[in-house]
Image (cartoon, rainbow, N blue to C red; front, side, top):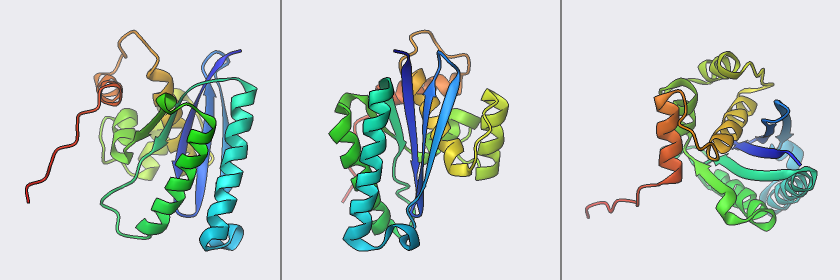
Amino acid sequence: MPRSYIGIDQSYSGCAIVAFTPATKTATEHVYDFSPSKAGVGPQRLAYVHHTLRQLFVNLRQQGTVSQVCFEGYAYGSKFRREELGELGGVMRLALVQVFPPHLLHAVAPTTVKKYVTGSGRADKDKMMLAVYMRWQHESSSHDAADAYSLARIAADLETEKPLELKFQQDVIDAIRNPKPPTKKAA
C-alpha cells in the first residue's frame, strides 16, 4: 500500500484535511463546516466534531498506510474565541490519538507552516494559496485547504532522509524532528 501523509488545518468554523500520497502524486481534500449553525453548540458540537473527525481518521487509516500526521497548532497570540478553539483542538487531538500512534502526530505552529511554504512566517492567506500553487501546482479549494496541504507536505518531508533543496524548509523539518525544550519565563 502506498504511504500517505495527512495535514489538518482547523479553525473555529471548520476543518480542512488533506491526505497526500507522493507515489501517485494525489491529494484528497476533506473540508468540513463545523460552524455552530451546522454542528450545534457546546457539548453537542464537540461530540459532533469528534465523531465526524474520528470516522474520517478511521477511514483514512483503512485506505492506506498513514505515515505521519501534521496539524496546525494553536496561535497563542490570538485573543478571539480561544477557549472554543481550544475545545475544538482538544476534540480533534483526542480523535487523532484514538486512531493513530502518538509518534506519528506533530503539532506545527501557524508561523512554521508559513515559513515552510514561503520562507517567511508572516505570509498572508492569499500569498500562502499562491505559494502552494506555485511550489507544488496544487490548487486548493480554500485557504484552510492550502494550509492542510502544506501540513501534509511537511508530514511527507519528515520521512525524507536526503536534505531538502530549500534551506528554510530543511530548517522547519529539523525543528519539528528535534524540538527545543520550552524555556521558563522569569517571574
